[in-house]
Length: 393
Image (cartoon, rainbow, N blue to C red; front, top):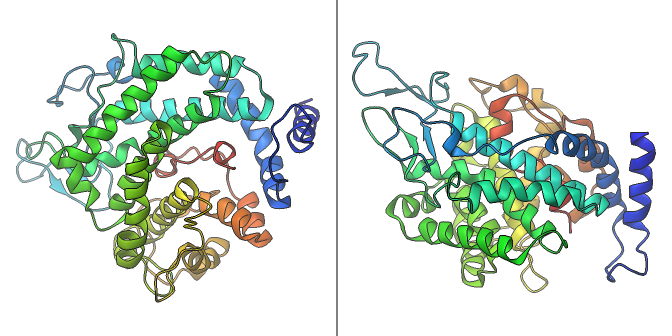
């Protein structure tokens, strides 16, 4: 029955009936991507319809310096000092401390998963039941006074005995990207009231102000590796939702003048990632983030997909470098990751968006063969785009 429904939905999506607005015909690879995603979308949306909202107010850590509405997380690679158990934590790069407080991060990932699934199903079917349920979660996080999250990130990735919060923690809200994109997809539905939309966009507008003015945020903006990329990626997603053209222009400029020339080597690799303790996972992650910048920010007059630096660095070069090691991980020329080596790759976003953009069936075929529903928490956390359907134009 599920396959029959999926087949019918694909016909409706690609038939371009007279009631739908005119648009360019979908590419064959885009249709193939939709066909691959549809069963996952419907299954995940069925799960999402059963979920009740859970926000940051549902869990409180005694180590947080913030209040009940403040997001709190702890630095992943920081541990108690065996020589001084009650003193400041010490770093073990690449090794995650399982005793850290993660409830807020997990709640945000769950929120992202719910909204991404419901928005995908709405885009696939047009059924407004998905929008109505999504609004329950959106109101809880952004507009309900008892449960909303404050639009700031003062207490993210704290380190016991050292910092109550750090700019590096801003990377935690990449999980809100698919929430913002889901709102864009659903905002035209009859069920999506003007007051709800205004309240949600106001929250993201306030958060963008914090992301571009607070000292912690400015520090993260200027981070040299994937953290800097992810600052630009989420600002781009939130600025598109709020129609902030100034910030969108800033993000395009940073992609061209900062991220490509300072992070990508002439061969398409990311030296700042390959020198770390998880070179494979971080390289995948950073390429996904740069790909999303191209997907979010490209316009007919400023196409980041085709943009290259004077010496030829561009997103296509990055995909061409990493693809062989996604197809055959054993050929990876750098050290293995100290953790989660066996869990990568999954259905990386750069494969599907790159395949559709550059009409590369090999990339799409590899993406189709990989895991589209990973369950390892570390993989899910570093895969903020888990619902490509809502991003496919």
